[in-house]
Image (cartoon, rainbow, N blue to C red; front, side):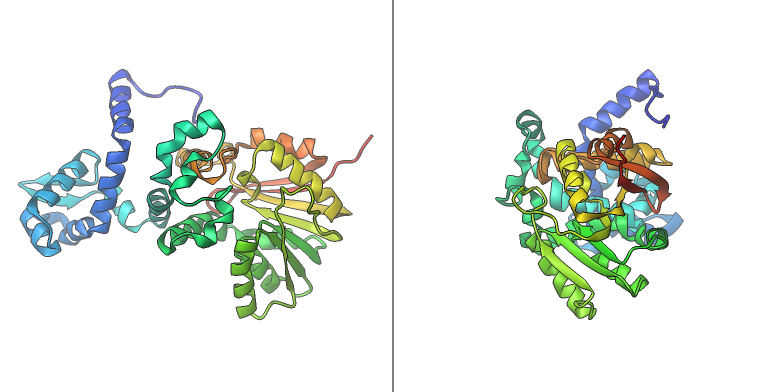
Length: 358
């Protein structure tokens, strides 16, 4: 990946970029207000002829002052342009309004992360998710997701599912071209992969292993689909050394799960997979690695998401690079036998087998 090997900016451009960073939180909140208050939508509706501040204020029942400060800020961040006191939309604003990825990211940052990020420095210094206190009193966010306020929970799940949902249909044929009949889905969350798998392959039984909170949600969805006889629930904390994994599986599936743990924890979890897996079985790992992306913007999104893990989720994990992640597989006694990059928005699928000794 060549995105980050050289400094591409000139001096003046670099200083401008520094100001964007300095005012980053302001820019974010202004863009969100322009979207949520319907101001950008109104400017878009006006088309090329544009619309005045006074008309916007009247149509949205807002003060002229409020509309003015927001749109003047929007000018400098490239969301609108103004000619003869009439405002028109830009391409960037179009994506703020209509791009699903942008909406999911913005809602996640505001609803889940924004207050907690104030404690990032403390998180770095202490090695714990100091921002968690803004959401609740849990060891990690995963114990508390089912207890979050509805709007925060909605944004969390929308973000979590967005990056895997488009990948699942693409990897189902790849995973089940192998002789898989008894699958352990570790960190199955709300059961989306298990439900999709049960629909794809009829002679398959899936066991979802996760914390009790997510499994409660998964169980309700599975029952609604009439799949309770084919999908079993196994509540466990994968980090609890006194709780062994169930055994006898010919495949293990983990989707966007191992990025929730530190490198040492990843190695520990994978080692415990040995006992759960038949000798000729394999582990499938679906992860978005920032150094396996086609576009710099995709790498950017993943790198910034790491800070959510640092400040709020658990204080010790991240969206990994493949360079950091793959050695964990080796240290746990597995080897990568197949790797498929560029699946969906950002995913890489790894197929791993127990490493032969000697």
